[in-house]
Image (cartoon, rainbow, N blue to C red; front, side, top):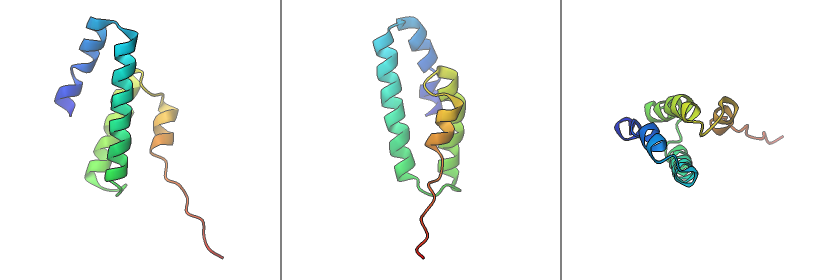
Length: 82
C-alpha cells in the first residue's frame, strides 16, 4: 500500500483537478472503512498499521483532520445489561 500511496501527492499536483482529488479521497476513505471492518482486533498488527498510516498520510494529504482520524478509530462503548 505504501508504494502506491507515495504517488498520490504527485498525481494530485500533476492533475490539479478537484474532481480527481475528491474521487481519490472517496475511494481511499472507503477502502480504509472496509479494512476497519475486516480487521476487527484493535490490538492487532494490521489494524495498528492501518491506524498509523491513516493518521499520518490522510492528514498530510488533507483527506481528514486529526479529530476525524480519532473519531474514525474510536471504540464504541458497549452497553451493560443490568
